[in-house]
Structure formats: C-alpha cells, structure tokens
Image (cartoon, rainbow, N blue to C red; front, side, top):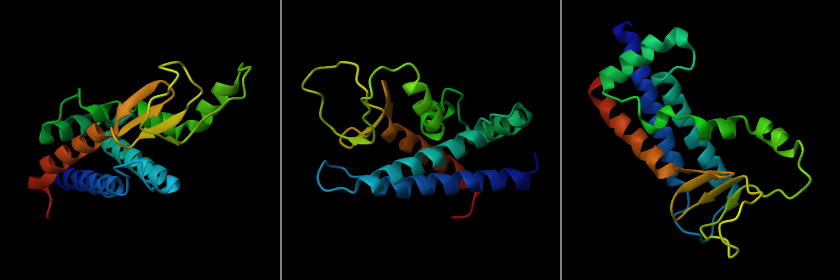
Length: 170
C-alpha cells in the first residue's frame, strides 16, 4: 500500500473516532431529562463510526484484507480487538431483517423497542420482547438478549485514535 493511502486511511480512522467521541458527549449520564431521539441518534452515530473504523481495519471484502492487516500492524492493533466484532452494528444496520424475522411465526404482538432504562425488571431476569435498549448508567447497549458495553467501544476508538497521532497532523 502506498504511503499516501496509509495516511488517508489513518486520517479517516481519526475522523470516525472524533465523530464517535462527539456523539458520546450527547448521551445522558443520568436517567433525568433526556431527549429520546437525541440518545438514539447519538448511539447510531457511534455505531456507524465504529463500524467504519472496523471496516478499514478488518475489511469485509477479502480483496482488501492486505490493507487491513498492514494498517493493524502499523497501528499495533490486535485481531481480538472489540471493534473486530460487528454483531451489534449489524443488528442496528440490518434492523429491517431483524423485525421481519422476529414476527415470522410469533403468536404475540408484544413488542418493546428503544427503551432507555437503567433499572432491572421487578419480574426478574425473564426473556422479554425487548429489542433495542440502552442503560445510561452503565453505558450498556442491548439488542434482544445480547448486551454490549458502549463505553468499551468508545474507549477502544479513543485508544486507536491515539495510536494514529504519530501519522497525522494535529
């Protein structure tokens, strides 16, 4: 890969990391007064930015695998990095498919989505019809029964951005 191309990719990683960081600042840190749309807008922006960094470093198209490997080596990023797993992003990006699959064969019309709630159910830990939910106190993002630590994703994006600093202008 040409040096200029490396710098362009690294600059894009920095940009996407900054977008995620700014989006995270808009997330509430308490359960008081928040704008539900603003919360989900911020979460979606973080997920898209993280996915863009992930696709640069771990290209889904094998044709570009060498590029990802070279950049990961240059930035000293391991394959077990949290950004390598795109499951959470895929749930949000392919939400249309998740909806359709959910309602195939379901006898119940109960459907809960876009919940912002730091409290556990008084009914205990039972399977629910809850789809997307966010806990502002723990910064945990859930999709159905899968939970992801959004703070860990943000921390990793910041760590990667710091690793890019020697290669880009401030």
